[in-house]
Each structure stands twice: as structure tokens, then as C-alpha cells.
Image (tube, rainbow, N blue to C red; front, side):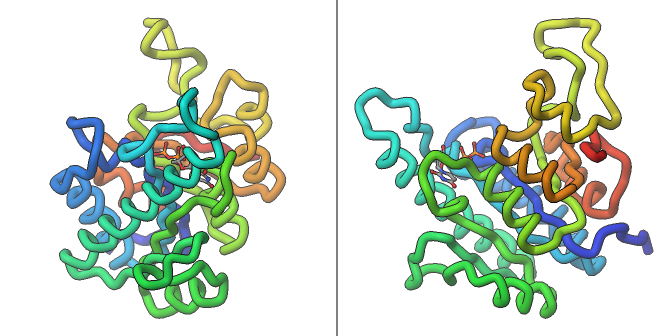
Length: 236
Ligand code: UDP
């Protein structure tokens, strides 16, 4: 049986990752493949917290017709929808899961309580976090960094649509080179934007390693949870 390197990880899944080819909404086969990979890692004893985005349901922040705060409120509710849908898929394949949200919607999900999360981990449950940090102007990247810090995760795993960090945009430059490892400071200089600035600063300050990897192959979640050297590692 393979050995897992990490005791506890925070996995950041964007809303887009759950939309599959259709690019919008919740695509059950895509989500199921992702969940199967999470299940395999959890079965090895890795404690997994998932911070989920909402971009597949709502991208209203830049709308000129709506106040940003309002748009962000809706965005946070979109992340809660994904959290609930993801929990349902994980449960359907036999995982024990809890959804916690930073905005109280207690008829549907638990409020986020640090000690309760730790208790869930101790009982082998996967915890999905909805509503980001619970305030507008933030992103779920920031929420993921915050959860990784607050829950003393060994690493923040950022599943993306590209297979790591490149020295320049691989969609524009043929000679772009994938970087196996970069430093936290590199993310703050703008060129290698793995996370948004707030999240990057938090990870740097708390010395949280980040692995950026491709979700085109959902099994990469399992590999990343085990500590395999895939994608790009951000570390000091
Ligand atoms: N959001 C917010 N505060 C947070 C996290 C998210 O206001 O702490 C809102 C914001 O409108 C954001 C949306 O929720 O655009 C969805 O989150 P995000 O863009 O991070 O999702 P992703 O791009 O990862 O799917």
C-alpha cells in the first residue's frame, strides 16, 4: 500500500473544475471522477478539507449593473451550492462528509467552527468548506489559504486546468518552460500568479507549501495528497 506524506491537506477546487466540458453548472461525471480520487486519498488516512469555488454558477463581480458586495454575496452562495453538491457525490460513493459554511445557513450546513472541523478530521470525515471567508472582496483562494493556516494543513493543493506553473504563458509562447519548484516570493511579483495576492501573501507568511497541478487527470488529486512530485511546488 502506498504511503501518504501528508497528514492533513486543504484542496482548492474551482467552480470551473466541477463544470467539466460544459464550462458552467455542475457536471456529475466530472465531479464523480474528482470524488473517486479524493476517496482513494482519504482511505489512506489523509485528512482532507476542500475549499470550493463558485465560478461555474456565478461570475457577477465585474458586472456594471450590480453592486460588488451584492455580487459577492451571490458568489458565496454559489460556493455553498457546489459544497452541497460535492458532499452529495462523495456520500454517494461511500465517504463520510460534512459541509461547513462561513455564512450561517444552518438548515443546510454546519457553521464553520474550528474545533468541530478538527473533530471531523479525527473521525475520518472529509470536510467541505463553503462561502469562502464569508466576506465580499475575497476569493476562495484566500479562503483556502486561511483554512490551510488555521487548520495547520501540511500543504495547500491547488487543482487547476494547467499542469503547473510556467515561466511565461504557455498558450502564447511555444518555448514556455514548466517550473518544478518556485518560491513564495515569486508569486508576489506578479509573473507567476498561482493564487491571488491575498492568498499568496498568507501562504508566504505562514510558510504553507502549495502544489499546483492539473485536474484534467482527476487521479492527480490522489497523487498530490500522497506527496507525489507532480505539477509545481511553491515553497521557500
Ligand atoms: N466570494 C466572496 N468572498 C469569498 C469567496 C468568494 O465574495 O471569501 C465570491 C466572489 O464573488 C467570487 C465568488 O464568490 O467571485 C466565487 O468564488 P471564486 O471566484 O473564488 O470561485 P472560483 O473562481 O474558484 O470558482
